[in-house]
Length: 116
Image (tube, rainbow, N blue to C red; front, top):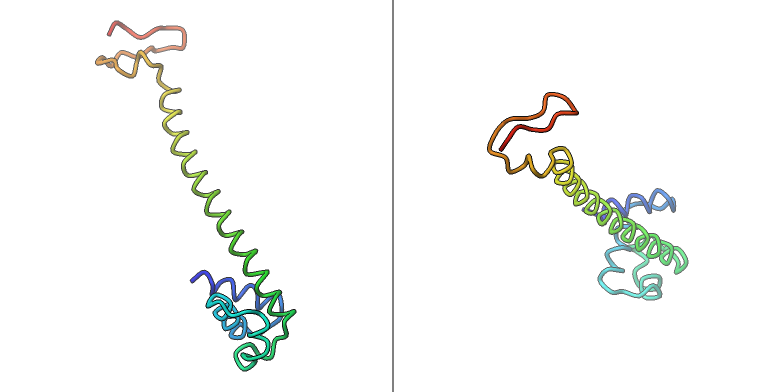
């Protein structure tokens, strides 16, 4: 799960137990506010204060944005590669050869293909 991976990264960066980070992320995603978490969910967050919870929230948002951007870039590159393969086929074989029913191809660069 993405949040598990993000929780591990955040826990490592902030030097906080990953269970507390996971719990904090869960509370934030359920809509709990930072003051509420800091005051009433201390047992779930390891007594994190509002500043640390805000860091967890901010870093989580950064990681989510980075992951979304990464996904977009990968999708774009995949589409471009597909496009490149189609273009490469067209560039490799001139248009008048593509529809030819004969298999006559030039034997050197200076020769033209035989009659179609």
